[in-house]
Image (cartoon, rainbow, N blue to C red):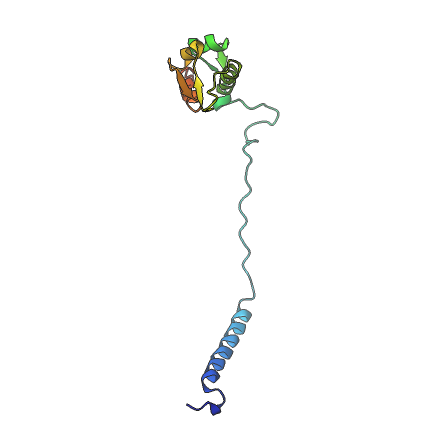
Length: 142
């Protein structure tokens, strides 16, 4: 229990620490080569498929595809075929022109007689409902 032995408790710790330093240096010597990371395969861009010539314009699909519409929507818009995005834009133009948006709750739209014909006779619709209510007016074609 005397401390005159030259730091007996810490002497053992130094020996352990010295051994671990040696182990680290020998481990560093054995792993001299580092593996190279794998490179992902090159991606094909979706804008230029392999089978298509670059000069050909792409056919619109989905909401950009021109589709025939129901007679009610045809009467409202005045055209027999339209894209879904154009139909929504024209309806919003009509709503803004006739000030049909609720001033306190901008998410609500008041339907006048003309809008009721395409929105299933509802007095009010939410702006998120417009797409769902219009989907029944687009005729499915294959």
